[in-house]
Amino acid sequence: MGAIDRIREYRQSHGTVYTLKRLGQKAAQQFLGTYDRRWKRERASEAELKAQRENQPAAGLISVVIPVYNTDPGMLNALLDSLENQTYLDFEAVLYDGASTRAETAAVLRERSEKQARFRVIRGEENRGISSNTNEALKLARGEYIALCDHDDLLSPDALWRVAECIAEKHPDLVYSDEDRITQNGRRHMDPHYKPDYCPDNLVSDNYICHLAVIRKAVLEEIGGLRSGFDGSQDHDLFLRVAEKTDRIEHLPYILYSWREVFSSASHRNLEICLQNGCRAAVEHEAALGRKAEAVPVNKEIRLWYEIPRDVTVEAIVHGDTEEECQECLGELQFRTDWPQLTGSIIVAGEEDRISLLNEAARTSTADYLLILDARVTEMNRYFIREMLMFAQRDDVAGVTGVLTDRKKHITHGGFALGMEHTAQCVNEGMYVTAGGWHDMMNKVHNVSAVSLCCLMVKRENWLDLDDGYRGGLAAVDLGLRQKQAGLRYVFTPHAQARLERCSLLLSGEERIAEDVARFEERWGTTVHDPCYSERFGKKKANYDYSGRSRNKGRK
Image 1 (spheres, helix red, strand yellow):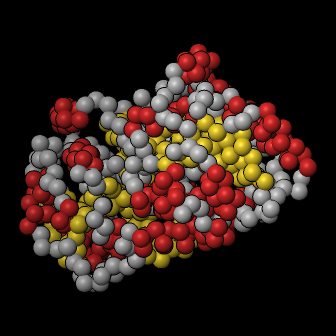
Image 2: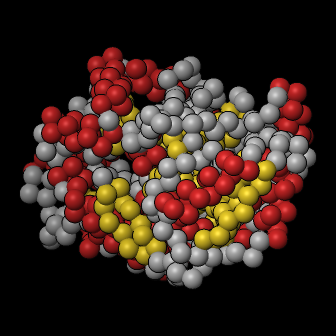
C-alpha cells in the first residue's frame, strides 16, 4: 500500500483533524528532529555510562539472540556496534544465520565472530523463518536470560545494564523497556513509545511490549519458544504465553531500543496476516486462562468477543439530582440496550449523601452485576451493557467503563490518569472519539487505574464500599487504588458508548474539593504512580503529551 493510500485509510478511521495532527507530528520529527533533540537530551550521559561500566550488576550472563537472513550489511554492522558499546559486560550475542545468500551479510558475521568471542554465529542450512531461526539460536544460548533482538535494530549503550540492574534487584521472568523508531537511514529518532507497566488487557489487544524484551530462559523452554505458525505476530503470541505462566513482569521506563523503520518488513507487507495471527494468539491465550472468546481484526485492532451466560442479572443504579432525570435515564437504558435480565433503581441525592446511598444500594442489591450510572448519561449504544459485562465477569477485574462523549463526539470520560497536577484527570478529554490518540489506545480495550462513578460496571461480589468521607469524584479514584491493592484491575472498552456532556471529576464546590484532596493525599500521598499511564507524559492534561521540557529519565 502506498503512502497516499495509507493516509486515506488512516483518515477514514481516525478523522481528518487527527490525521492532519499526526502528519504534522511525523513531519516535525522526521525533518525538524523535534523528538530527536529530546532523545539526545534524555539518553544516558557519558558520565552515567562510565559509572555503569565501573559498577556491574550481579545478573549473570545475558544472551542476545538475533535471527539473521540477508540483512543489509550497514544495518547489521550498526546493530553489532550497539552491542559492542554496551556498558553491561557479561553478555553474549548468538546470531543464527538462516542460510543467507548475500555475501556481504556473511562477511559481516564472519568478521565479527573472528574479532570477538562473545559474538557467536551459527550458520543454518536453510532459512526457516523468523520464529524457527530464533529458536535455533535459543538452543545454543548459555545465559539464564534471553534478550530478543531483530537483525536491523539498535540498542542503547545502557540497555543491557538497565536490564541487568532489574534482574539483580527483582529477579523477574520478563523485563521490557520503552522504545522508539529510527529512520531507515539511521539519521533520526522518531515516535517514542512510552509504555505502561504490565497491563494484561493492553497486551491482549496489541503487542505493546514488543522491544526490548528479556525473558528468563527457563520460561522460554517451558512454553516451547516461538511458534512459526504465528510469524508476523510471533512476539505477541510469545508474550501472551509467557503471561500465562507468570506475572513477574517488570517495565523499564527508558528508551533502550530503536526499531528501524523498514517498509519491507513483514508487519508492513503482510498486515492482514499479522492481524489474523494476532487474533489466533489472543483466542488461545484466553482459552488457556479458562475464558472462551472469539477475536476478529477490526480497523487494525484485535476485537475480542467473550461468551456471557444469558441468565446473569444486572441492576442499573442510576444517581442524579431529580427523580425525573433518573427515571428518564433508566427508561432509555432499558429501551436502547439488549440485555434481558436488567433491573434498575434510582438514587436522588445531593453531594452530601450520594456516596453513602450508592454504598447502601450496592450492598443490598441481589443482582449479579451492578451498573453505576449518572442520570445525565444518554444515547447508549445497543451493546452498552453486554460490552462491559464481557470483562466484568472476569475474576481479575474490579470494574469496567465505556467511552462517554458529548454531542459532538468529543470524549468526556474514558477512565482517569493518576498522579496529575490536579490529582486525576480524564484521559484524552476533548479528543474526537474515533481519533484513537496515543498508539490508538482509545480504539482498543485497555487497562486504566480509575474510572468515574458516571459509568462503572462491577461484579457485585467484587464491590468495595466507597469512602463516604469524600463528597466528590475522588471517591472513585480512591476506590481504584484500593482495588489495585486487592490485585484487581479496571478495564476500558471503546465498544460501550454513550453520551454525557460533562464528566467532571470533582463535582462539588472549591471548599469541598480542597477537603477531598486533603483526604486523598493523607491516605495516598502527594505523588501517585499510575501503572497504566507513563510518567514520561506531562502532568497538566492526560493527553499523552511528551512535547514539553525533558523530564526525569525514569523511576528508580
